[in-house]
Amino acid sequence: MLKKNIRANLHQLIDGMDANECYHTNAQWWGSHPFNELQGVDAINGVWKKIRNALPDLERRDSIFVMGKNVPDDRVSFAMAGNLMVASICHYQGTFLNPLCGIPANHKVVNLRSCEVHRLVEGRIFHSYVLIDFLDLMNQVGLWPLVPSLGSEGLWPGPATSDGVRDDLESSSEDNKSIEVVLQMHHALHQFDGINIESMPMDEYWTPNFQYYAASGIGTSRGLTGFRCHHQIPFLNAFPDRKGSGHYIRISEGNFAVTGGWPSVEATHKGEWLGLPGTGKTIGMRVMDFYRLEDGKIAENWVPIDIIHALKQMGFDVFARLKHILGDPETNIR
Image (cartoon, rainbow, N blue to C red; front, side, top):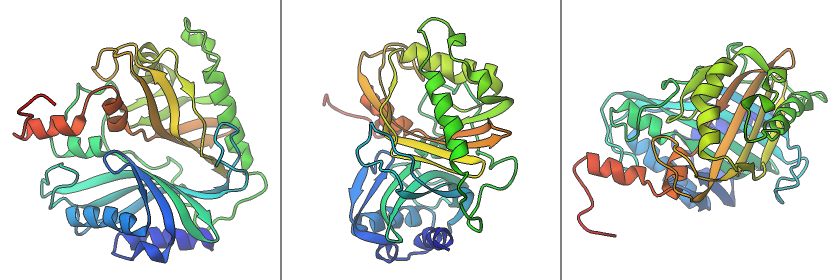
């Protein structure tokens, strides 16, 4: 019942419900750049006011909605065992009538991709993490500010099994099985020897034709070869010293599992990535991972990343580039 109520609350927020109805008064809302880290229901209401103004007829369409008790991560002090969390992938679909964060309206239907984690305390939301894919929105309105993605861009499909929205299902004592497989796969990623891609035993954890849906800028790939060519190899060439920073969420429900960190990955930008040559800068990446498992292996992986925030740390301001494209360039040295 709690999960169903929280899902209903999240749908009501876009219709104008005051955040005070479902959030703690001093709740935190951490979102993609340029929203970043906000606190309090007034700030949260402000986010939804901006989104509703941009898409006045919007509706929320969930493709994944799961809940579970957190498996702790010793690297993150507040990622305590037993934290009750809900996680979702949705699109806010509506007619784009007014600018949003400097992205001009095209007066057409758009799908604003949002991946969300909400930590619950006493039946109300205490902390939200919300990764909205503004790069994907720029692509939908025909204003792409980067080099072409190596993977395929476009609307993320929901789970192939059409069972991602689980608000009528109850958690079971076996629900940690999926997250255990995912964490074993994460351990295998860290076996990379810096030389041979085969040093990471990925075949053990993924189905042969798994789907990898990455954030806009990276794109979608299929199977281990596609994943390596379109994402993993370029990423490792760019960030050879990458390391995990810790997860604030590690939950699973049935065949679904979710992890996420703020940041999730820390690395030095040493080689070309998304068209930008190495800068030598150390960056942190805000990442979530949503997984669907099939017969004990990962069949689908949705990977929201705050790409714009990562690029800003590398010295590339996507929103400033967008302003320039739209005829409002910088007219002096900063």
